[in-house]
Figure 1 (cartoon, rainbow, N blue to C red):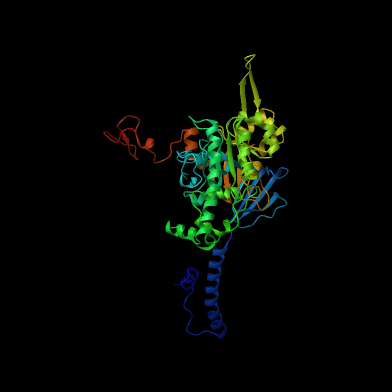
Figure 2: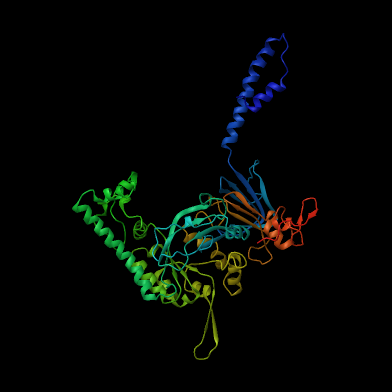
Length: 503
């Protein structure tokens, strides 16, 4: 095979004359290998070239320090390598440039908890830690499209609140046609709830929670005893069930944990532990994070008791309803972070006077020293920017409100060094707004995730159709004429009896 550059050399070089001087012969002999070496060098450089992007903005809101005016962000291979004023940062000569002086660069919002993006938020099984919500996430759901439109770069998807112990969640970037493309942290966290589902009482809900961990302990104790009575029992049982015991799965190890342990678990190959029990064991050993939903103030101490007695309080985040502000002292004492689910305002009627009383929940949490994150009420009109702006309107400090949708949720997800702020070493996640990110008149003009542009408002077909009435080419409503049964061709002609209206 001849490289293109080498082939072009032969086509462009005239046939040498019959008689040549020694210098001409030497030049000809050297030119052919030189051309080949040049072609090979160009090929090698192309294969190892790093992906680069330069973002320019009139203002950069870093969320890691003061704002930068007339700033530049340099991203290489998905990470920020330089950030600062334009006159202080050296821009790679071979990097494309995005942005402009009229735009505001922002690290993008972090959705700390949601059950959107799946085919359904809840399962029919109360205790289902063996399920993985990655099997339920739909990459082409409109939710992820809205996330890009509103500048959300990182999403923590967990099962809904109607469960006892739900399936394992995952952190995703809202872009990609497959789960593998979207995944940032697969197998991340478990959802639990102390709020009972319809038709159940809180007593049965809490009993089911406690019994799940009681069943785990009894299962492990029986497994160890069977192994001691008959050596090799656990391995034979696992192989009989078709499970492979290789590498780490073939090894046993002592049970970790801070509250209760089962002695002798090192005798059991970890691959021999029932897959339905393994996620709960990982939880007790401190390998999983828990998102514990509390729908009423009385749910809070019960959730904390379950977490504390089973050793995962340090990995617990409470997802609370607005009424749970009444348990703020208990939450503050436990030292756990909080995600405020939906409403920020709690309204109740005084039983004596009949007057309505409003409580601004983020204000209470902030005053009590509780770290909290806000979550979207819905994917579009009440997204994270709206929640933060509404909180500021209710009197919350602007820096606190912004942190509740950027740095705090990033820290809750254990990703504080990757997302939620703009600094050297962070992921190259940047939302370019037309103005202040919390202004109702501002729009996301461009969204960059890990150094790649994933949204351009000028190419947002659905947005243009909604705001400008511009009909995307090739869509069904464009193809159909204004009268029922008439079909409009590309050349403008109509025929009768064509396709009817869409279903």
